[in-house]
Image 1: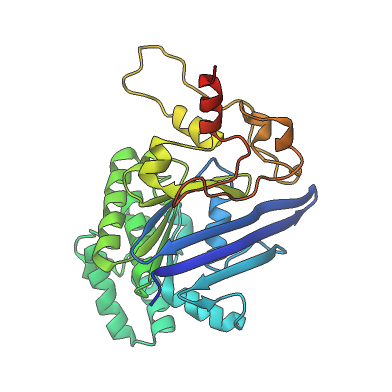
Image 2 (image 1 turned 120 degrees about the vertical axis):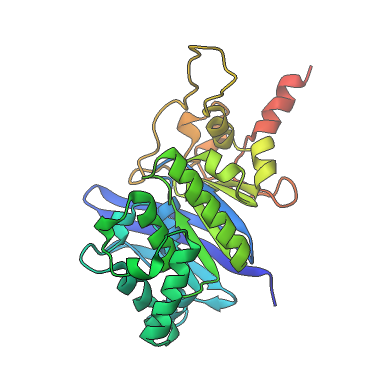
Length: 331
């Protein structure tokens, strides 16, 4: 059996709007291995959530989707839609960033947890209810049996997010996608939810895609990091290697923008100049060129191809960070 669980190849998403087609994804390749936690990081609008939704089969109305999504050897784009829905529903779980929007406010949470398991796994409601009690206990909700009857508004924000995690796990998936799962929570609760996700991934041997714009979330909890900008992955590799030696100027700029606790008082925060690209007016070249200190004329005609500068690393850049460092050191 291959250790590759999910393989996304050439994923492209074009969304028609009054201002023109928005290129939400411009050809994305992503591989997730069994038991691996992959961090997907980038500014808002870079395509992270669009990629997550494409993997689970959700798309915006009228969106044109192309590329391949292969789950455990099964090409989900080549099978019948109802077959693909069944595979995704059974084997992929997703936790969204706003639990109040993810939960139905007029349905008890017990029913919301059990209905997916009954539909996708064919178990009885009694079995699903017993498993729901166990899941709520696992995610840290006390008095789980009685709380199945409660509605979302009767839970705090942190507990609602735990409920959505229980829902995502109800079908015992192989892959869990956490799409900005801690954005709406305060810092203390964020830590609790992240610890919970990491523990569940380890205990259940889950593969996970952790989507975040917060590099500190990705740094200590993922095996691999993929950096997105302008609808493409500009750099990926082992998390420690990407953070210690970023190759793409955008990755380096993101890391430099993190506030430092050891900085002198009243130090100015580092910011990336310019604005994220308008995805309905993307040019033909590197989407980061307009904001990049390393940009050269050859960055503008064509998007850089994917290269492998070292083992386990991918890069889309004509002028990576190291090449400029070497040039500055040259006599």
